Amino acid sequence: MTVIRALGGLATALAAAWLSFWLSVGAAHAEPVAYLEAVPVVASPTCAGVVSAEAQVTPVQIESWVDDGVRVAIHYDAGVYDGSCALTVTAAWMNLDTGVTGTRDITAVSTIDGHYGFIGYANTVFQTGSGTVVVTLSSHPGAEMRVTA
Image 1 (tube, rainbow, N blue to C red):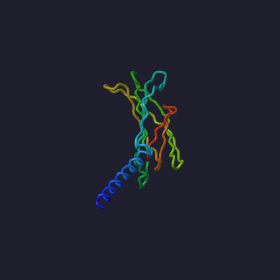
Image 2: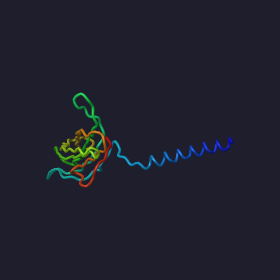
Image 3: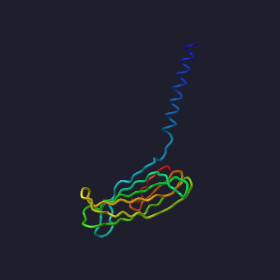
Image 4: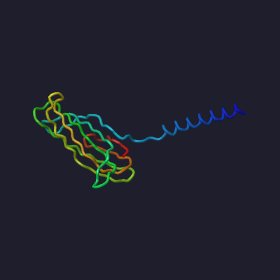
């Protein structure tokens, strides 16, 4: 009888481990941070370069309470230029769970950095509420970043 109990306990433990494994790999989910690789852009006739982006879940302060939000940042490398270049990218977002949407321009001004060249960085925060949020940027047509707030 002890052998049967031991085998029953082992079978139960193996079944629980197997079920736990398949439940964990079967559920697809978005990450708390997403990236878009660098793409070439032309900010003006004398300013070109590359821009990359990231979206990250972040808390947002709204008056006296904190809500879920997403920070969207762009990184602009103007390459070689002896002055300042500005790149404006339109960021649009949609909360797939609630249907709420928003849009805003983000402008990065490249400044000279002795080591890295002409770089610019800018970010904005959206109050998205909780859920799966898709962020698109005008600099990356057809691409999206998906995060869970």
